[in-house]
Length: 241
Image 1 (tube, rainbow, N blue to C red):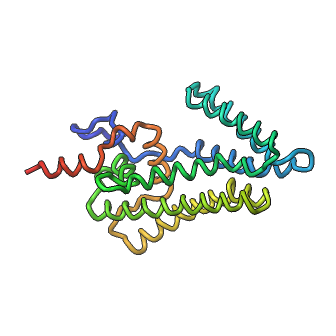
Image 2 (image 1 turned 180 degrees about the horizontal axis):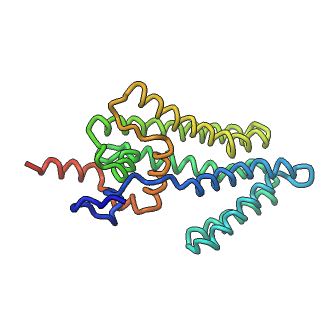
Image 3 (image 1 turned 90 degrees about the vertical axis):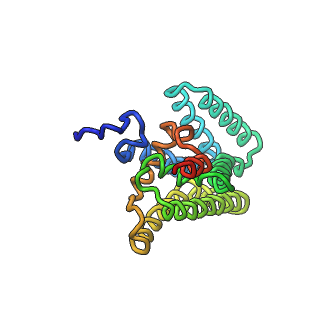
C-alpha cells in the first residue's frame, strides 16, 4: 500500500482514498425492502398483508435495536409497534404507508433545505467530504442543480406514494413503495452518471457505486459535523490573499 503524503492525515476521511462501496448493507436494505412486498403478498390468503408488512417492519426494527442498542433504534421500535396496533385496530391498510411518507418528507426537507441561501447543497457536502480535490466552481454549480433534481425526485416519489396508498389496491402501493421506487432511484443514479460522462466529460467521473458509497460513508462517518457550511468555506477562501 503506498505511503500517504506527509501532509495527509490518515484518520481524516476527507484526505483518504475514495470510499469503497459497502455492498452488504446496500444488498441487505434492498432484500428487506423487497421482502416487505413479497412476503405479505404470499401470505395474503391467510392474513391481511398490511398486518404482515407492519409486523415485518417491527421485526426488522427489533433486530436493529438489539444490534445497535441506541435510543433512536428503541424509539423506532416503539413507533412501529404503535403502527402495527393502529393498522390492526382500525383495519385501515393505508396507515402502513406512513413510514414511507415520513422517509420522503425527511429526504425532501434535508435536500431542499440545503439549497437555501448561504448553505452548501447536500450533494456538494458529500462530494467535498469524499473527494475534496475534485471540487471546483463548475462542479459545485453542477452539484447544486443535482441536489435540486434529487429534491424534486423525492417529492414526486412521496406524492405518488400518498396517492397509491389512498386510491390504489394495497398490492400496487406495496410494489411501488418497496420495489419500484428503488428501481427509480437506481435509474436516477445511472442516468445522471451517463449524462455527466457523455455531455459533461470535463466533470469528475465518479460512478453510481462510488456515489452511493460516498453517501453512506458521509452519513455514518461524521460527515454532518466534519464538513463546514458553504458560507464558512467561502469566507475562508475570501480571506486568503
